[in-house]
Image (cartoon, rainbow, N blue to C red; front, top):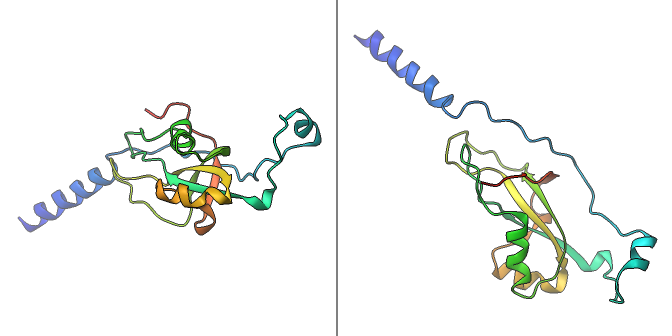
Length: 148
């Protein structure tokens, strides 16, 4: 009887661990923030150029769930900032590398949304639920084509 209970428990554990199947790994590339070339600066409107030292990357979790996807798109996330008066210079997607996430359907992923904003707008971004990206470890990568 004990052997049967043990075998059933082991089988349940194996099935539970493999329930989500193998998740395709996202190919992530380390990238540096884009900088404008002389040609791009000349083509830009007559606004004063923002110096790189006046900018800061902020992030928030995308809200994506394992086996389900979903979450906020980069456009929705930057829209939350811009609708509250924060100018977004650049947006990107990434994944946190400083945390581990249990492999369980419905569990959170390490997917994050990154936005480059002026340092003067950091307080407004913090109030909206964003955090400075220099406080975590992450890798930038391609944004999912379909978040649903």
